[in-house]
Image 1 (cartoon, rainbow, N blue to C red):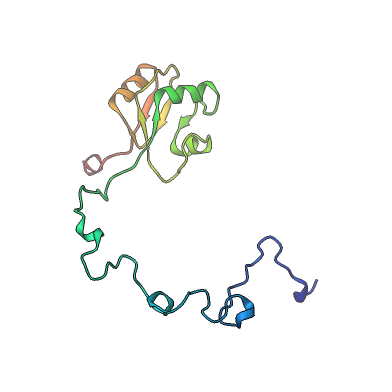
Image 2 (cartoon, helix red, strand yellow; image 1 turned 45 degrees about the horizontal axis):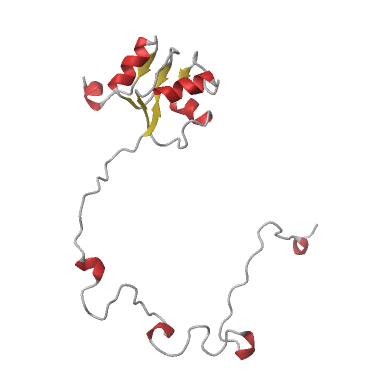
Length: 159
């Protein structure tokens, strides 16, 4: 095999549009821009321009607040955990962490924190290492003979 015999088979390139190369090319003369006017010229930017009056995106009042520090949790209910233990997707004897939940396909994103909520019934005694859990979930897991380990908060680390 030589360099001139190499081919890119899986990803064929699309040819770029060659404009202004004669009428017979189909993109000659006006190059697909129509006739005259601001839009046919180079450097035209009129998106959102309303002829000098105040644009609608400025006229309409803005409402609400977006908290940029909000933490988005991946939520798992206790009933779902019991269902996954019953179907043997996760092992009740091992420690259940974010990594094991991700490998079992229970959570979709590895980088987002996991929170356990107390909806449903749990019979298996589970050892969980998660980022957050509700008080009812912790109580129900400990009642079933399990244990929940949460990461230390800033106050606990300082003490």
